[in-house]
Image (cartoon, rainbow, N blue to C red):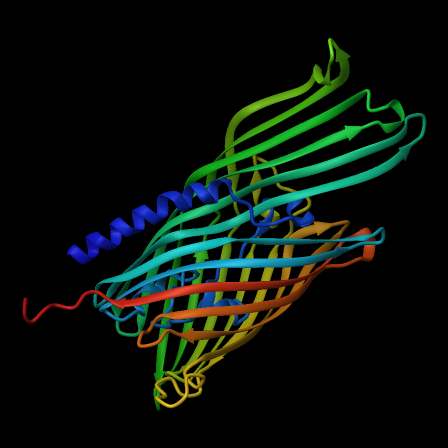
Length: 431
């Protein structure tokens, strides 16, 4: 019991500052994050990131698989797992007018997991859901008005702090759930300038969404044992149209540039519209995932996932968003370990991973769905005389297109995660 209390105490000390960090941190500078709820973050952790993100069917005893809460019973009955991850993304954006480059490096997640009994396991942690971060400038000439300059910028993040529980009611069958607190702020703003008038006045629009509420998702895994330490696992996850409390603010102002008494700057002269902290509901879509995992113990694992999210029917303050469409994600990957317990070669104990993914995203811009395609690869480096692992991975991909006056993003992602594995729940024979 002392070990369990220590685990919970550590979780509390780590979780509180991490919650505050996630609340005000931002993980993107993408113009695509201007729409919907921003850039949706992947549901996978370090190990499966290198495997295309496919993880719904995976039951690896040395990973925390938050994508399917049924996996929490897969760990050793004596093991305590703690994992955290960092990521960096380097992007080059291009359209018919020009191009620009961005880079983002940030904390991604943390989680811990441990058994309660031989047939029950639990996990808790903090994961990102979506990020907004962009700054765009658009110039236009309008008849009888002259030059008009539009500036669009926004920031913010949505996160989930979760607690999950899984049980094995029967041999080779596991069911589980993640109960989470969904929270964060998103801000989207716009300036309208009139350069031909010396920027005498501007129009500013400030829109903010603040979300907070509880939700849950469910998971199932069914394993079919086969000969020669092989097995096949089918995984299923469901999240049924969760509803969250949201507060919407939308303010539009006309500001005049003045210079009096030695001071200069813009001052508010007219409020065009004003909506402040109106409480309503945002209903996210039905989310269904199916995964299949083939395992040859300590040698090979091959995973494949399909996920569907019905964003076309998601409702924001009572209305659907015409820019959103249904999202589909296909991913597949594999892990190969030459000789897990080799005593002669460290590199034979390393886990080598690769994968690929295809996403029809939830954004439809200029009547064209934004597509995202990528390949990934990486390694799991075992720590000396330990079951802990350092996971390194990279992903190269392309999102969007330059057709129909759109933007294409070529990106490279680099991920680092540390998985700490310890045996905590050993009953002492001698005191």
